[in-house]
View 1 (cartoon, rainbow, N blue to C red):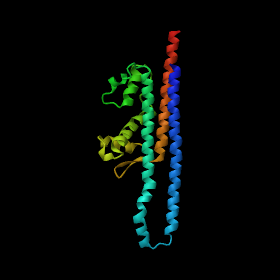
View 2 (cartoon, helix red, strand yellow; view 1 turned 90 degrees about the vertical axis):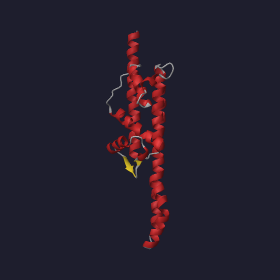
View 3 (cartoon, one colour; view 1 turned 120 degrees about the horizontal axis):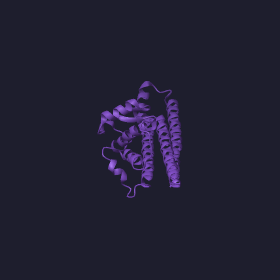
Length: 220
């Protein structure tokens, strides 16, 4: 059983590290593209009259916003969804080693996310001691609401079923903001998110290892 949990942890860490590398490399590419665009337009328009310059930007402003805002938003949204799915699947894999019908967590599902319900099962039914108040878990609870909005509302705050709750999370969380009533993420948010998920899984699997050692002692 210990080998199985080690494999589950290794698989999750590998996937999350890949997302980290992918995010960093694509962010760098987008930064370079934006710099090239600004340099190109500055050189092209340096001798334009104010009237022609205004016409130029009327025509090309959307291109600028696409590179500066839209592309990064699509990337960061997709990283959040992928990282959250990795976390959810990892917890489900842990849960499935104990739940024979793979549905044990559902008894805790009422008014809870799948992740919250699975964690409750891991704590209560598997006897794994996970602290309730550590920083990483608090972040993941907020991330659940952000991810749900991205998946179901495409980042539109005004379409969220609980706008007040989401706005509160946005106001108290660094590197996320309300931009024209849509979720705006800075690249630092992605870095913090991935670090929190990786650290959370380390805490979880350390707790699982401790439980396995205790079981081994009592069985000897």
